Image (tube, rainbow, N blue to C red; front, side, top):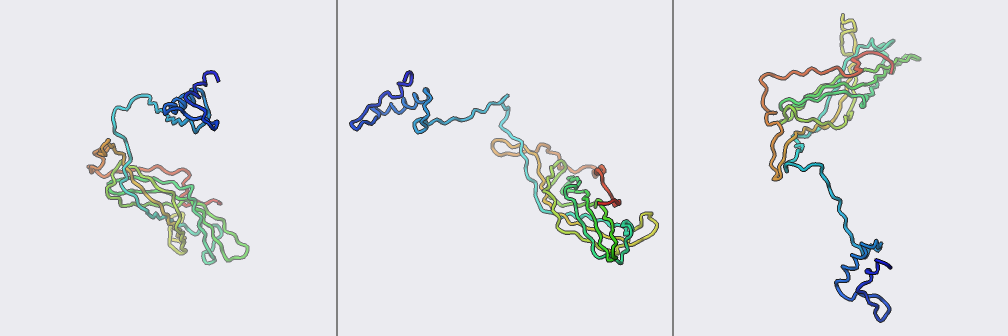
Amino acid sequence: MGNCSGHWNNWNKNDKGKFERSDHKSKFEHKKSCGSCGHHDKSACDCNFKPVRRLTSPLNSDCVLVNSVVGSKMVQKVAEITLPATLFTGLVVADIVSITVVPNLAGITHTATVIRDKVVNIGLIPATISIAVSTPGLTIDPITTSIPFQEHTDFPGACPEDIVTESPFVVEGTFTQVGVPVVDIAELELITGILVKVVLRTTITVTRPVIMDSHGGICDVNDRRCENPTTPPTFNLSAPPNGLLGGGGGA
């Protein structure tokens, strides 16, 4: 067996023709020789390998940066718009049988901003509005538009620079009402309008980056984030891409 002969050192054949170790030390020698000779008997070679983690450079502290949860709550947001009935070509309001609203959740654009103790959310949800009428043979072309929504949620303890995470929006219900007065497109007179409302649900979670030491002590990355500003902050939000504010167009 060449160099593997050491595998059988300290083993003797008994009266029944089976091999037995002659002393306690032979177990260690057996494993050692097994490992060095490439023996594949796993019952004999009990090797435990642990991966070695190598760092490109040593850390200079035992502190870590973590996100502390300020709060989390389920909230509702209401998207609402009143459209002039004249946007639907050929529509006679008295002939309306039903109105169908299909929101496009994948197309939602919104921003969430934290001010002291509040989260302010402003956005648009695209929706296709279809109307069925009682007039035989008449089809009303549907309209695709974007319905604005805005909501402010009380969040005690939230401060500017905190991070807002929202779960995917869920539509809880859609509502329509015919006969709501609205200014016409030329803004000259009040005409019959159609109110469209979409109720959305999401969960808002506010987190804050903090430094935690090895003893569990925590300090804020910015210890001045919750100081009251001398003047109320002003935010100018950019227009969302392809945001239709009540325009026409087939679906």
